[in-house]
Image (cartoon, helix red, strand yellow):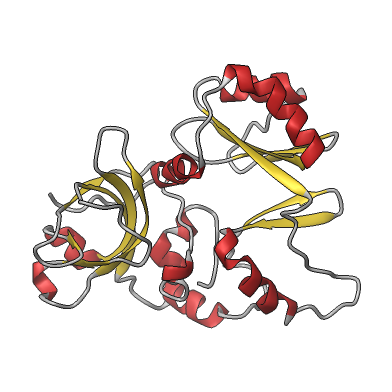
Length: 262
């Protein structure tokens, strides 16, 4: 995988969300596949702003702000200039996308009723939801099934031809998946980074997996998603950085994936 997109429609346009660090390179690659003159691809950051809202009152706040809220996970609705998305996860979570003036008006309505945080908290919520992303340190390291995307509705196996289809389809129908994405916690001296290697006794000095993303946990340490060899995860003793590094403690995901042995 080169990137993971969240795709939604806004008027006549389709918007593709991805980490800003990948945007320019992915834009160049996508333009290679534009076959019709009526299709244009541009970075929309200068036109649109995004506000994220999560928590027990999130749906109520969205309804009060724009008059409605998507009912289903991954749902999308439009109200005037505002596009609202409902994201998966254990807590209600929404994104409001709007042109800068409209986003500023929205924020003024919401500011007194919410606690302001930053992007690390939003990434932590993705970790709790078991939603993967690709960052510069993990470009081309995973196929979709390794990152559980087929469990999240992120892969359509009935779709027509697309680049990489052969590998993805072969893994689904003929192969045996050897790596999966897990959620875990680790007490480490510093924040793990996407692409940091993991080790386990079964393979000695050879890495058994990579960090997908990690963020500070409210109770201390770091919560993370990691793609790990299934046999190593089941065997336990997976550690960050080296065979003597901090031990990963596995946590359950909000969708069905077998939890490794302790």
